Length: 453
Image (cartoon, rainbow, N blue to C red; front, side, top):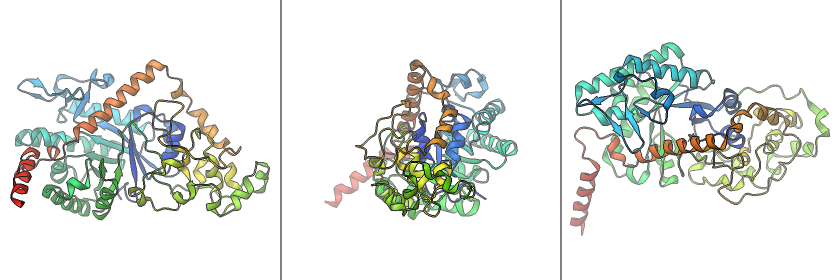
């Protein structure tokens, strides 16, 4: 069984977590995070309502800011060409040699320390596409690197079992080598205006669908333009889509609302009428779900696929809802009046969670909204204690000094800039033999357009 089965929506976020961001993450089927920024307790909180979590690792590059990993590398762990290391000045990283057993061991240790030890469900393996980009014209080296990646995946499976494994790009490598060992592949720059007009892209859609049929490998897509059109194209292709409006260091709040919990929940009869003393929670708990707040509820009734046409639910989030936003969670289960008022946030079934999802500045303790917020209606109740107890577990990350936060924010921005720059030019990343490069394609298109007139 593929651990990505049932995933209909996801988001990539490499910034620092806040309590409100963590609450909004619970509305997603899947989130991809930078595990260095999270504690095990925070990961458990994200997963409390059934959200799957993948932790980022870079397989084919090591950035200089990752001093911990860089200090452990040996000379053979770097890929060299003409005796020189391959350096990417845009994001200050070096191409690695995945065929090196020592480097494979370092990556496996990273997975153990940052993914397995923190209870994260699997790994998102970035930079796999470098294998095709860098070595396509050298068949001997290409095979060597692909074999090295397969050995790494086999060992990861042997050590960590059925953890989810998703690679970023490397479509030819997927088809020829890694499909039996991974659960998914990410296709960044999945913008409808490019995909629809590009023959290579249309052919690749069919290939990925065939790989899914044979090996059960799901395709995750990301667009940066034409949100609605790109969502529809991905849905028609049976892909799982996310529209990235900002950099990956900005959390896009309120895009989806979980309408049904996937995690098992305790029986709702434990606490019952004794909680009637809490302020005004009983009427709200017994009313229909649409009466508990002024705006968020309609969003909760939408299917998750509608985020492609209206990703603006961010407007419903309050400014200071870090802990108070759990009120709707405690009162939104339409069939159980008062138990929810004392249960943790894991018990919401209709999940008007977007109210907790407004921050976009991951390192700040007082995040600012992207749009003018609406009033939180009934979010100021005293029924937030279950989450406040969890807050105490998460106190450590907030004790960092301003210097540390500034350094980590700079690192996260560089991380996001890398992804934005690396995938800005679509064809470059998966240029197959016999296909024209992007520059030639543009010239050809202009030449043909000239004769249309």
